[in-house]
Length: 190
View (tube, rainbow, N blue to C red):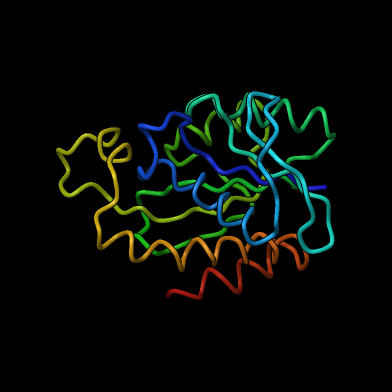
């Protein structure tokens, strides 16, 4: 079994912000694999289905970004899912919009949602799909204001293909393993 969690903030005022790209990826995954996010438990909106022949739980933590680990910890404990089978999708300011990077594990890299997950799982060993949202326009721009800002029309054009790639990458991780998915998708937009 796998847990696929897209990170974001739950209120409508955060819709279409850079920080909510993980939620958007989950929406695409749910459409592609006919999964209904109709359950609210574990501090998350979630649904279950199958991807690549494996049972999956797809979730949007409702704890706000900085406490995302609480929801993921509760789901992982209930379903007895190890960190290696928890795929987390989130925004990355170090990647240009339209870019994606898959990693098998690693540090939080300054991302508070990932810090929370690492803390709550007591592990850095979970796969992650980082979707580029670009860096702030200049070094004095407040990072929180930037990631909570909305995408420009130009950036929106780059999003749909990368969100579709993220859905395909999830299936590739499940069916073929993280290394195969990294080899395929980390080169795709180079």
